[in-house]
Image (cartoon, rainbow, N blue to C red; front, side, top):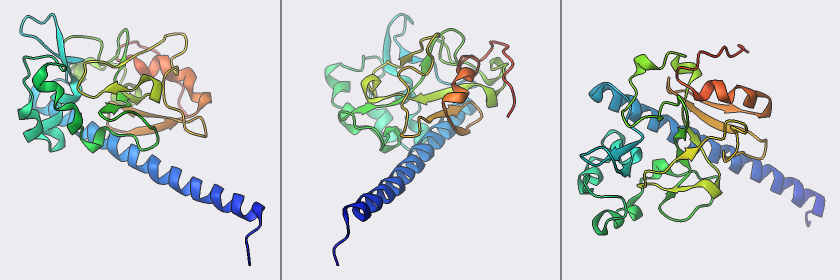
Length: 220
């Protein structure tokens, strides 16, 4: 007996929902792995990575923080392949773009090879606002109230090795963030937790994005 168009549509909706749920779980797991790497980096260097790997004179951003955390996501051999005193697009480093670790992928967003949607929110008082890594002691708003990383949409995806992230629009802080079918965005907080936030919670984004803004975020 053939399924009716209604039954086919219902089955497709169910399959889509299951696929979306499975892909979301992968995204959450990837962010949690990166959180562990960030804290592993902090344990060794007494601060989170800076917003980029800089040249010796500190003036030129050469490579992304994503390269800096490679040893902490079981990618030490790949880290050693990089010439850290050369920019991401040097003849040597450019060849390594194709080796992007899976942890930087978001299965829910289609992007070009070597691109990632896992980015640091860049702006005034964010954790990645300076050329020097921020220690946890400077996250005075509290690690559970301060965003570490976000997922951007396909349009804002970046080459994973490039020192490029998401410039936050203070008036529209959710702009450029990836939203799923339910308008949820995934946020990685400095305590390592990953939370989904719907439109009603976006009002909290300006407060969550700063490490030392002193804002009071209403509790659920």
